[in-house]
Amino acid sequence: MSRTSNRLAWALQLVAALILAQTLFFKFSGAAESRYIFETLGAEPWGRWGSGLVELTAVGLLLRARTAVLGAGLAAGTMAGALGAHLTTLGIEVQGDGGTLFALALVTLACALGVLGLRRADLARWIERLRPRAS
Image 1 (tube, rainbow, N blue to C red):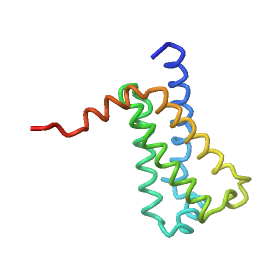
Image 2: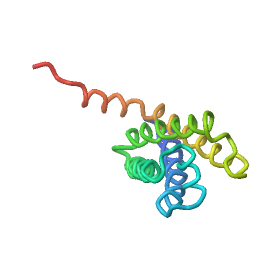
Image 3: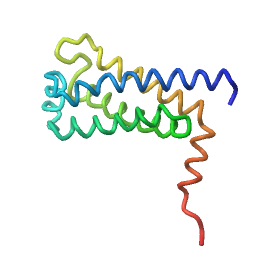
């Protein structure tokens, strides 16, 4: 990976991690908006706590070069689910937020996909590690 690609990957990892980390406070503190979202989805409180733990794990993985691609995959999957919930149940605007949560999910997904693309060699190595070996 070139120096420029590495720097771009780190920038994308940091943006995704910061957005995910910022939302953790609201999920774990039981903020009204977060409770509303998961009540609407029929997943309060376990869905809120579970998604918070998944996002916390993604943050930790994104902040280590060795595991960044795993964090990006986890973040991408989580944000795909969040966007799906917005598009099918919640709507783009949630409780008058002007679409902020939807936009943050889009940005996080774009960052995660960018990391996966830039670190595709790392992804290939992880896939190879996980592939079952013939006896």
